[in-house]
Image (cartoon, rainbow, N blue to C red; front, side, top):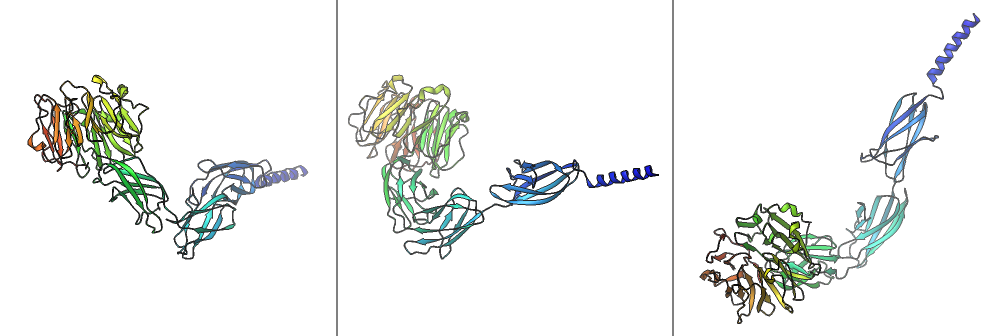
Length: 550
């Protein structure tokens, strides 16, 4: 009987111990940590209070605490930028408990006032912490509150257009309120950096500031013509569109601020003449008055033309072509133009193409090239800088420098890329065939390169020239009085029709052609066919192009 009682007591004791759990029975906790906005939060330490068991949340906010003794525990989640959070949990033997945390930022608060030195209303001043999205706007008394600022060293800035910016440094402590006060004074004239170049109808980028975050009544004029279109206006940068009607050459630029107490700033920029027509023997391209591109003829360089507006200048090459847009960007097209992989450009002022390469002249006077690897002879020499004009011939490239000297590179057949020693005072060049026609600043003309048909024999009495051009074996010039003079040829290139003898705005270069063309002041093109001129294709009937002023 005694033995039976002992057996029953032992069985009851085992049952009780099984129900209560022993010190060796373990379980685990799994869970997630998120922010108030529901985003996963990594790097959170989750620990069971009173134990050494700690886990850190991963990129998905997940954590696991293993080998926790069965029974009740308190879990604590901690992160340097967030307030601690705790939750109770009951661990069962060989089971997994689920616990999730939502952490709130551990922040301090910044308050203060802004006072205007000129006694004007302090309302509407923006107070912010750079590098964050934290900001506030002052009320009618100049008061502001930044309610949720992360602890640590912070810079607080007060800003209002046309006033000097004020800033304060402070150390923010969680759960504390810090007070800072600002005084804003009237700003003086903006500091403006003017680019070297722009182009008719193209972008003019001014940097410096402060210009004001909102343009308001602030304005820019170029050559006395107000800017009607602004690509962007920020406190440190203005991107304005030069009117297409502004004459080429050095033009004054005036920046006038909305605030009456801020003096206007005057500088200058060299405005380049837009090139709205580019022609080769069997193909052509032009820019209409509305900025759209039109092409005609047949050839690899005009395959798949871009269907975009805002065109300013155009240039055709052998296989590829380039379109300069008003915003300073460049579109390349033609046979497999994608292989050229051009980098983004936002400050282009002129484009040119020669053989298998295309070029863009930038507002700072530097030149970028896009080319097939086999055309390495057209790589831009390191010496080329301060460029104010660029032209692409059949196989060579010529640039005009700011100081009036010229440089050339590429194919050198008939010395096409060999600039005569001492040549200076150059205003414009036209590269055609294996020769170059040069317009000097004094209105006279010279040149270099081939002279098989007299294309290099400039008439001695030629003066007051405003535009030059040429073809494969001829050259011509437009004088200030509107006369077109032609020399060289031998295939009828200089047999100008009556329509090409008056109201001419520009002579057009056909770099590989034995025929001529002019752009008239009404935007129409007049071309004439030389004897045995193979491949010439006339522009579409009724075509009218933009006419850039001299």
